[in-house]
Image (tube, rainbow, N blue to C red):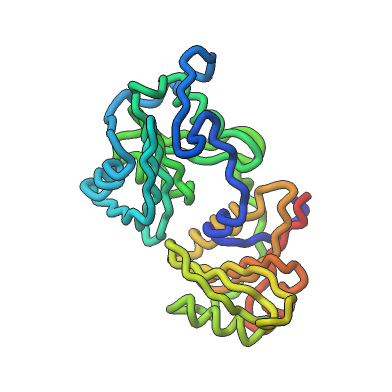
Length: 280
C-alpha cells in the first residue's frame, strides 16, 4: 500500500454496503426452494446447539457471560433475525443474528446464505452452529462469541477478506478523551459536528461543515479501550479497494471523515495525525 496510513472505527463499517444475503427475506417472508442446488454448510460447523428464535441466541450469550442487549428483532415465516450489542474485552460489538426454521429452510439454503455472507468485496466474519449464524461486526471479537455459544468462527474469504498489517504512522499518545462527546465538541470547533447521533456501540455520527450551509459531510467518532484495538480498527478501515479513507487519530480515538479535504485541518486542530488510503 506504499505506506498508506489508515484509520477508522469499527462503526465505519456502517458506511459500507452490506453483501446481499442470498435466499433471505422477500417482503418479510423466507421463500424456500428445496429443488434448487446450493452450497453445503461448512463441515466444521457443529450440528448443535439449535435455537427457535434469534432472541434465544442473544439470551444464550447472556447466560454464557456475554450480555447482548437486543436493539431490534424481526420474525419471518422461516427465519428470525435480531441485532444485539455485547461488550467483548471492553469493546461494544454489534451482532446480527440469523436463525432458520429447518422445516422451512433446507440446510443447503442455509449453506448458500453463509457462503454469500463470507464472500465478495465486503466479506463478513460469521459465528455459526446448528441452524443459525451471527455476523460479528468486530471480527476480533468473534472467537469469544463462538466460545460462549459452542460454535465456530467462519472467517471472511475472498476479495477484501484479509486485513493486511499495513504500516501506521507514529500516533501521538495524547490527547486522550474520557467521553466521545468531548471529542465531538473539539471536532465541532474545528470543522463542525452537528446533527449528532450516538450509535448502539457508543460512537457518534455527525455532519461536518456549518448547519444550514448546504455544504456538509459525515464523520464517525469513536473511542477505543486500547491502542491495539484502535490500530486494528484503523487497518480494518483501509482494507477495501475502491473505498478511499481519510481519518485522524491520536491517543484513544479516531475520527473517520467522509470529506477527504478536512484531514490536515482536523489533525492540526485536535493534535492528531492523518491516516489515509486512496482506495487503490
